[in-house]
Image 1 (spheres, rainbow, N blue to C red):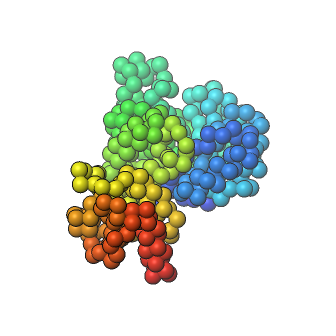
Image 2 (cartoon, helix red, strand yellow):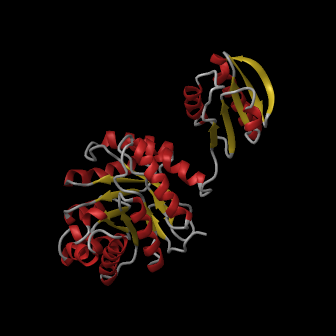
Image 3 (tube, rainbow, N blue to C red):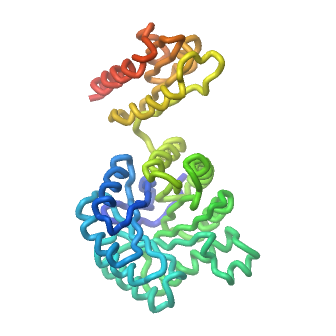
Length: 355
Protein backbone atom coordinates (compact mmCIF):
# COMPACT_ATOMS: atom_id res chain seq x y z
CA UNK A 1 0.00 0.00 0.00
CA UNK A 2 1.49 3.36 -1.07
CA UNK A 3 1.84 6.03 1.61
CA UNK A 4 -0.61 8.86 1.04
CA UNK A 5 1.35 11.98 0.06
CA UNK A 6 0.15 15.32 -1.24
CA UNK A 7 0.33 15.99 -4.97
CA UNK A 8 2.97 18.26 -6.45
CA UNK A 9 3.15 19.31 -10.11
CA UNK A 10 6.55 19.34 -11.82
CA UNK A 11 6.21 20.72 -15.32
CA UNK A 12 3.50 18.61 -16.95
CA UNK A 13 3.93 15.71 -14.52
CA UNK A 14 2.25 15.13 -11.17
CA UNK A 15 3.80 13.18 -8.31
CA UNK A 16 2.36 12.09 -4.98
CA UNK A 17 -1.23 11.24 -4.24
CA UNK A 18 -0.85 7.69 -5.52
CA UNK A 19 0.40 8.75 -8.95
CA UNK A 20 2.98 6.45 -10.59
CA UNK A 21 6.50 6.61 -9.21
CA UNK A 22 8.58 8.56 -11.73
CA UNK A 23 12.16 7.77 -12.73
CA UNK A 24 14.70 10.54 -12.50
CA UNK A 25 18.33 10.87 -13.56
CA UNK A 26 20.93 13.60 -13.84
CA UNK A 27 22.97 14.73 -16.81
CA UNK A 28 26.75 14.50 -16.55
CA UNK A 29 27.41 16.99 -19.34
CA UNK A 30 28.37 20.60 -18.84
CA UNK A 31 24.97 22.29 -18.76
CA UNK A 32 26.48 25.22 -20.65
CA UNK A 33 27.03 22.83 -23.58
CA UNK A 34 23.45 22.95 -24.80
CA UNK A 35 23.83 20.43 -27.63
CA UNK A 36 25.59 17.78 -25.53
CA UNK A 37 23.08 18.23 -22.71
CA UNK A 38 20.04 18.04 -24.98
CA UNK A 39 21.44 15.00 -26.80
CA UNK A 40 21.94 13.19 -23.52
CA UNK A 41 18.47 14.10 -22.28
CA UNK A 42 16.98 12.76 -25.52
CA UNK A 43 18.79 9.43 -25.01
CA UNK A 44 17.66 9.25 -21.40
CA UNK A 45 14.07 10.10 -22.32
CA UNK A 46 14.03 7.35 -24.95
CA UNK A 47 15.27 4.90 -22.32
CA UNK A 48 12.47 5.83 -19.91
CA UNK A 49 13.69 8.83 -17.88
CA UNK A 50 10.73 10.97 -16.77
CA UNK A 51 12.39 13.83 -14.87
CA UNK A 52 15.88 15.14 -15.56
CA UNK A 53 18.17 17.15 -13.29
CA UNK A 54 20.97 19.42 -14.53
CA UNK A 55 23.62 21.11 -12.44
CA UNK A 56 23.57 24.91 -12.46
CA UNK A 57 26.91 26.11 -11.04
CA UNK A 58 27.22 29.22 -13.25
CA UNK A 59 25.07 31.96 -14.70
CA UNK A 60 25.87 30.63 -18.17
CA UNK A 61 24.45 27.25 -17.15
CA UNK A 62 21.30 28.91 -15.83
CA UNK A 63 20.83 30.83 -19.07
CA UNK A 64 21.28 27.61 -21.07
CA UNK A 65 18.14 26.18 -19.44
CA UNK A 66 15.95 28.38 -21.64
CA UNK A 67 17.21 26.75 -24.83
CA UNK A 68 17.45 23.27 -23.32
CA UNK A 69 13.81 23.47 -22.24
CA UNK A 70 12.71 24.24 -25.80
CA UNK A 71 14.25 20.99 -27.07
CA UNK A 72 13.18 18.42 -24.44
CA UNK A 73 9.88 16.86 -23.44
CA UNK A 74 10.38 16.01 -19.76
CA UNK A 75 10.51 18.28 -16.69
CA UNK A 76 13.88 19.83 -15.90
CA UNK A 77 15.18 20.22 -12.34
CA UNK A 78 17.96 22.72 -11.61
CA UNK A 79 20.52 21.47 -9.10
CA UNK A 80 21.84 24.27 -6.87
CA UNK A 81 24.50 23.88 -4.22
CA UNK A 82 25.87 27.06 -2.66
CA UNK A 83 24.95 30.17 -4.63
CA UNK A 84 21.37 31.28 -4.14
CA UNK A 85 21.72 33.55 -7.18
CA UNK A 86 21.97 30.45 -9.37
CA UNK A 87 18.61 29.31 -7.99
CA UNK A 88 17.06 32.66 -8.87
CA UNK A 89 18.56 32.54 -12.37
CA UNK A 90 17.44 28.94 -12.92
CA UNK A 91 13.87 29.85 -11.99
CA UNK A 92 14.02 32.87 -14.30
CA UNK A 93 15.21 30.68 -17.18
CA UNK A 94 12.48 28.06 -16.93
CA UNK A 95 13.45 25.34 -14.46
CA UNK A 96 10.42 23.19 -13.59
CA UNK A 97 11.78 22.52 -10.10
CA UNK A 98 14.87 23.49 -8.13
CA UNK A 99 16.89 21.33 -5.80
CA UNK A 100 18.51 23.14 -2.88
CA UNK A 101 19.84 22.50 0.60
CA UNK A 102 18.69 25.66 2.42
CA UNK A 103 21.53 25.22 4.90
CA UNK A 104 24.10 25.62 2.13
CA UNK A 105 22.87 28.78 0.40
CA UNK A 106 23.24 31.32 3.18
CA UNK A 107 21.03 33.11 5.69
CA UNK A 108 17.27 33.28 5.92
CA UNK A 109 17.16 36.34 3.65
CA UNK A 110 18.73 34.35 0.80
CA UNK A 111 16.41 31.41 1.38
CA UNK A 112 13.48 33.84 1.36
CA UNK A 113 14.60 35.32 -1.97
CA UNK A 114 14.61 31.83 -3.53
CA UNK A 115 11.27 30.88 -1.95
CA UNK A 116 9.66 34.12 -3.13
CA UNK A 117 10.86 33.53 -6.70
CA UNK A 118 9.63 29.92 -6.65
CA UNK A 119 6.30 31.01 -5.21
CA UNK A 120 5.83 33.65 -7.90
CA UNK A 121 6.28 31.09 -10.68
CA UNK A 122 4.79 28.13 -8.77
CA UNK A 123 8.02 26.17 -9.07
CA UNK A 124 8.35 23.28 -6.57
CA UNK A 125 11.42 23.13 -4.35
CA UNK A 126 13.14 19.86 -3.60
CA UNK A 127 14.71 20.10 -0.16
CA UNK A 128 17.78 17.89 -0.24
CA UNK A 129 19.72 16.62 2.77
CA UNK A 130 22.34 13.89 2.83
CA UNK A 131 24.58 12.32 5.42
CA UNK A 132 27.55 14.39 4.29
CA UNK A 133 25.79 17.69 4.91
CA UNK A 134 24.39 17.09 8.39
CA UNK A 135 24.80 20.12 10.65
CA UNK A 136 27.41 20.11 13.41
CA UNK A 137 24.83 20.56 16.17
CA UNK A 138 22.89 17.52 14.94
CA UNK A 139 26.07 15.45 14.72
CA UNK A 140 26.76 16.37 18.34
CA UNK A 141 23.16 15.79 19.42
CA UNK A 142 22.95 12.29 17.96
CA UNK A 143 26.61 11.30 18.30
CA UNK A 144 27.24 11.18 14.56
CA UNK A 145 25.16 10.65 11.43
CA UNK A 146 21.93 8.85 12.29
CA UNK A 147 18.52 8.35 10.63
CA UNK A 148 16.98 10.56 13.30
CA UNK A 149 19.46 13.32 12.59
CA UNK A 150 18.80 13.18 8.86
CA UNK A 151 15.06 13.44 9.43
CA UNK A 152 15.38 16.32 11.87
CA UNK A 153 17.66 18.20 9.48
CA UNK A 154 15.25 17.76 6.58
CA UNK A 155 12.17 18.75 8.56
CA UNK A 156 13.94 21.81 10.00
CA UNK A 157 14.47 23.04 6.44
CA UNK A 158 10.92 22.18 5.44
CA UNK A 159 9.59 24.18 8.40
CA UNK A 160 11.81 27.11 7.43
CA UNK A 161 10.26 27.21 3.97
CA UNK A 162 6.77 26.66 5.34
CA UNK A 163 7.29 29.63 7.67
CA UNK A 164 8.08 31.68 4.56
CA UNK A 165 4.65 30.78 3.22
CA UNK A 166 5.43 28.04 0.70
CA UNK A 167 4.48 24.37 0.68
CA UNK A 168 5.16 23.16 -2.87
CA UNK A 169 7.91 20.90 -1.58
CA UNK A 170 9.52 17.54 -2.29
CA UNK A 171 11.86 16.03 0.31
CA UNK A 172 15.02 14.07 -0.35
CA UNK A 173 17.08 12.45 2.43
CA UNK A 174 19.96 10.33 1.22
CA UNK A 175 22.83 8.34 2.58
CA UNK A 176 25.28 5.88 1.06
CA UNK A 177 24.55 3.67 4.08
CA UNK A 178 21.67 1.52 2.83
CA UNK A 179 20.10 0.58 6.17
CA UNK A 180 20.47 4.10 7.56
CA UNK A 181 18.79 5.49 4.46
CA UNK A 182 15.95 2.98 4.70
CA UNK A 183 15.37 3.75 8.37
CA UNK A 184 15.41 7.50 7.74
CA UNK A 185 12.70 7.09 5.11
CA UNK A 186 10.57 5.01 7.46
CA UNK A 187 10.83 7.75 10.09
CA UNK A 188 10.13 10.70 7.83
CA UNK A 189 7.18 8.99 6.13
CA UNK A 190 5.51 8.89 9.55
CA UNK A 191 6.05 12.61 10.15
CA UNK A 192 5.16 14.31 6.86
CA UNK A 193 2.95 13.88 3.82
CA UNK A 194 5.24 15.69 1.38
CA UNK A 195 6.29 13.59 -1.63
CA UNK A 196 9.65 11.86 -1.20
CA UNK A 197 12.40 11.51 -3.77
CA UNK A 198 14.19 8.25 -2.97
CA UNK A 199 17.68 7.05 -3.74
CA UNK A 200 20.90 5.68 -2.28
CA UNK A 201 23.44 8.44 -2.79
CA UNK A 202 27.01 7.72 -3.90
CA UNK A 203 25.98 4.10 -4.38
CA UNK A 204 29.06 3.32 -6.46
CA UNK A 205 29.92 1.61 -9.70
CA UNK A 206 27.60 -0.28 -12.02
CA UNK A 207 28.20 -3.46 -10.02
CA UNK A 208 28.13 -2.33 -6.39
CA UNK A 209 25.84 0.63 -7.02
CA UNK A 210 23.17 -1.57 -8.57
CA UNK A 211 23.25 -3.98 -5.64
CA UNK A 212 23.08 -1.23 -3.01
CA UNK A 213 20.33 0.60 -4.91
CA UNK A 214 18.26 -2.52 -5.47
CA UNK A 215 18.44 -3.49 -1.81
CA UNK A 216 17.88 0.03 -0.47
CA UNK A 217 15.15 1.06 -2.88
CA UNK A 218 13.56 -2.35 -2.54
CA UNK A 219 13.23 -1.96 1.23
CA UNK A 220 11.89 1.59 0.97
CA UNK A 221 9.52 1.12 -1.96
CA UNK A 222 8.12 -2.14 -0.61
CA UNK A 223 6.86 -0.17 2.40
CA UNK A 224 4.92 2.13 0.09
CA UNK A 225 7.38 4.99 0.50
CA UNK A 226 8.59 7.07 -2.44
CA UNK A 227 7.17 9.17 -5.26
CA UNK A 228 10.22 9.61 -7.50
CA UNK A 229 13.41 7.56 -7.61
CA UNK A 230 16.96 7.76 -8.88
CA UNK A 231 19.48 4.95 -9.06
CA UNK A 232 22.77 6.81 -8.57
CA UNK A 233 25.59 5.05 -10.43
CA UNK A 234 29.15 5.95 -11.30
CA UNK A 235 28.75 5.42 -15.03
CA UNK A 236 26.53 6.14 -17.99
CA UNK A 237 23.22 7.66 -16.76
CA UNK A 238 21.41 5.35 -19.20
CA UNK A 239 22.27 2.49 -16.86
CA UNK A 240 20.44 4.31 -14.07
CA UNK A 241 17.23 4.25 -16.09
CA UNK A 242 17.53 0.56 -16.93
CA UNK A 243 18.07 -0.31 -13.28
CA UNK A 244 15.26 1.92 -12.02
CA UNK A 245 12.77 0.38 -14.45
CA UNK A 246 13.81 -3.11 -13.42
CA UNK A 247 13.48 -2.31 -9.70
CA UNK A 248 9.98 -0.89 -10.18
CA UNK A 249 8.88 -3.83 -12.32
CA UNK A 250 10.30 -6.35 -9.85
CA UNK A 251 8.20 -4.77 -7.10
CA UNK A 252 5.11 -4.72 -9.36
CA UNK A 253 5.12 -0.94 -9.21
CA UNK A 254 5.33 -0.71 -12.98
CA UNK A 255 3.91 -2.84 -15.75
CA UNK A 256 4.68 -3.21 -19.42
CA UNK A 257 7.69 -4.12 -21.50
CA UNK A 258 9.37 -7.45 -22.09
CA UNK A 259 10.85 -9.34 -19.16
CA UNK A 260 13.86 -11.49 -19.96
CA UNK A 261 14.59 -14.49 -17.74
CA UNK A 262 17.59 -16.74 -18.16
CA UNK A 263 19.06 -19.72 -16.38
CA UNK A 264 22.28 -19.33 -14.35
CA UNK A 265 24.23 -21.85 -16.50
CA UNK A 266 25.53 -25.20 -15.31
CA UNK A 267 27.60 -28.11 -16.56
CA UNK A 268 24.88 -28.99 -19.10
CA UNK A 269 25.23 -25.65 -20.89
CA UNK A 270 26.71 -26.13 -24.35
CA UNK A 271 26.28 -22.65 -25.86
CA UNK A 272 27.60 -19.20 -25.02
CA UNK A 273 24.55 -18.50 -22.88
CA UNK A 274 25.90 -15.40 -21.15
CA UNK A 275 26.55 -13.62 -24.44
CA UNK A 276 23.25 -14.80 -25.89
CA UNK A 277 21.22 -13.63 -22.88
CA UNK A 278 22.77 -10.18 -23.11
CA UNK A 279 21.97 -10.04 -26.83
CA UNK A 280 18.37 -11.03 -26.16
CA UNK A 281 18.00 -8.37 -23.47
CA UNK A 282 19.15 -5.74 -25.97
CA UNK A 283 16.97 -7.17 -28.73
CA UNK A 284 13.77 -7.03 -26.67
CA UNK A 285 14.12 -3.26 -26.19
CA UNK A 286 13.22 -2.86 -29.89
CA UNK A 287 9.70 -4.24 -29.51
CA UNK A 288 6.64 -2.36 -28.14
CA UNK A 289 5.27 -5.40 -26.33
CA UNK A 290 3.83 -5.24 -22.83
CA UNK A 291 3.87 -7.90 -20.13
CA UNK A 292 5.67 -10.50 -22.24
CA UNK A 293 8.19 -12.92 -20.72
CA UNK A 294 11.07 -14.21 -22.86
CA UNK A 295 13.28 -17.04 -21.61
CA UNK A 296 16.87 -17.80 -22.59
CA UNK A 297 17.86 -21.27 -21.44
CA UNK A 298 21.13 -23.13 -21.79
CA UNK A 299 19.79 -26.66 -22.08
CA UNK A 300 17.28 -28.15 -24.51
CA UNK A 301 16.57 -31.00 -22.09
CA UNK A 302 15.10 -28.99 -19.23
CA UNK A 303 14.87 -25.52 -20.75
CA UNK A 304 11.31 -25.52 -22.10
CA UNK A 305 9.94 -27.22 -19.00
CA UNK A 306 11.67 -24.94 -16.53
CA UNK A 307 10.57 -21.89 -18.52
CA UNK A 308 7.06 -23.05 -19.44
CA UNK A 309 5.57 -19.89 -17.96
CA UNK A 310 7.47 -17.81 -20.51
CA UNK A 311 5.50 -16.59 -23.52
CA UNK A 312 8.47 -17.25 -25.77
CA UNK A 313 11.92 -18.70 -25.38
CA UNK A 314 15.03 -20.21 -26.86
CA UNK A 315 17.21 -22.99 -25.48
CA UNK A 316 20.60 -24.10 -26.67
CA UNK A 317 22.16 -27.47 -27.28
CA UNK A 318 25.50 -28.45 -28.79
CA UNK A 319 25.75 -26.08 -31.74
CA UNK A 320 21.98 -25.99 -32.22
CA UNK A 321 18.94 -24.87 -30.28
CA UNK A 322 15.18 -24.79 -30.10
CA UNK A 323 12.45 -22.16 -30.10
CA UNK A 324 9.46 -22.65 -27.81
CA UNK A 325 6.22 -20.98 -26.80
CA UNK A 326 4.61 -21.63 -23.43
CA UNK A 327 6.88 -24.64 -22.95
CA UNK A 328 5.96 -26.22 -26.30
CA UNK A 329 8.70 -26.60 -28.91
CA UNK A 330 7.74 -24.87 -32.16
CA UNK A 331 11.07 -25.22 -33.97
CA UNK A 332 14.15 -27.35 -33.37
CA UNK A 333 17.55 -27.86 -34.95
CA UNK A 334 18.22 -24.12 -35.20
CA UNK A 335 21.94 -23.41 -35.61
CA UNK A 336 23.31 -21.54 -32.62
CA UNK A 337 24.26 -18.60 -34.83
CA UNK A 338 20.60 -18.26 -35.95
CA UNK A 339 18.89 -18.49 -32.56
CA UNK A 340 18.79 -14.73 -32.06
CA UNK A 341 17.32 -14.23 -35.55
CA UNK A 342 14.67 -16.88 -34.92
CA UNK A 343 13.69 -15.15 -31.71
CA UNK A 344 13.51 -11.79 -33.51
CA UNK A 345 11.14 -13.29 -36.09
CA UNK A 346 8.86 -14.63 -33.36
CA UNK A 347 8.86 -11.30 -31.56
CA UNK A 348 7.88 -9.61 -34.80
CA UNK A 349 5.04 -12.10 -35.17
CA UNK A 350 3.92 -11.50 -31.57
CA UNK A 351 3.94 -7.77 -32.24
CA UNK A 352 1.64 -8.25 -35.25
CA UNK A 353 -0.69 -10.46 -33.23
CA UNK A 354 -0.97 -7.78 -30.53
CA UNK A 355 -1.77 -4.98 -32.98
